[in-house]
Length: 371
Image 1 (tube, one colour):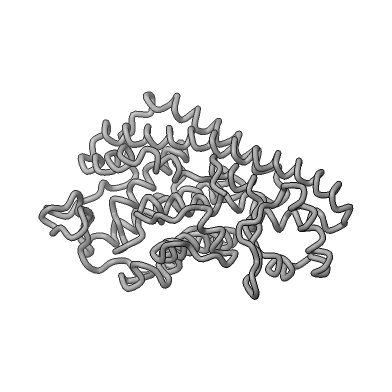
Image 2 (spheres, helix red, strand yellow):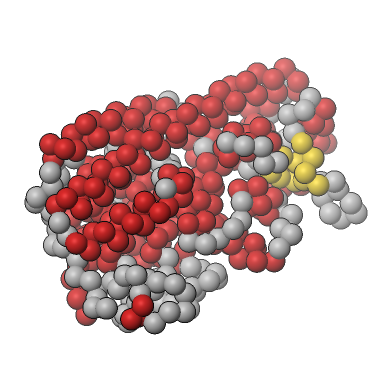
């Protein structure tokens, strides 16, 4: 197979008329979701478990098996049953760190290829792929296919590295264009990035990471917490097929891909809004209960800590800023356990501390009872 030659951007023959209904729905759903985000005093705290879930799902598309529950328990000090899950969890935690870094950077300067390389270096830090030119654009030919198969049997061969950088410069320039509709533009940005496949590993996760970062930089959402991976995971075959079909470079194929992407944005914005609202409602209910149970000025800081890290040990809770003395913390936690708000995930034994969980929050994020 010959290396793919991406279409030059911008794409001038997009069939807009056929896409207008989808564009309208996707933008309305996104605006509704952002309205929920805008009303949050601290979305980073309240939606922290959803950010971790996005990292879990995006990594899962690339083959990791760790669950949201396993990641949260691991951060609290409970090792997973299978050693292989530790490597998966480390990849997921790298994804989350890279997202936080990107948010900080975008508050100060525009998105750039240098930031893209920095995020790639963070994504592959100490995990699988760490020796695959981490933080550097590839200088050798890669291909996509069944692991272990030669290039002759590849499903897709990205651009030759000699021409790749030119396409990347064009992609970066298009990223900052002022186009008729930013969501259609984002559909093209995401697809073109995956077609260029500029790194030897980690392209899929970076491509999905670009979605909330673009929305955030364009001020379409007030915080970069848009979770698209759930839809992509649920429609994996259509997602992959849609990207591969773009090798034809015809207006009809691009229209089909853009339509799929807009549908993903519409459906996922609705689902994100539903979950964000459920988390906000849960926070409000728990705030009243915990204040009533503890009669403490530290009730709200405690609740914020629980939302930020819903699986934890009391010793780590003591270390957080704004917390009272250890005896007072233990007293409040005891009351929350007795009230059924907190669940014991692991009993303490000797020097091994007890692990507690705000299970209702975790199950709301996952959409199922997982702890």
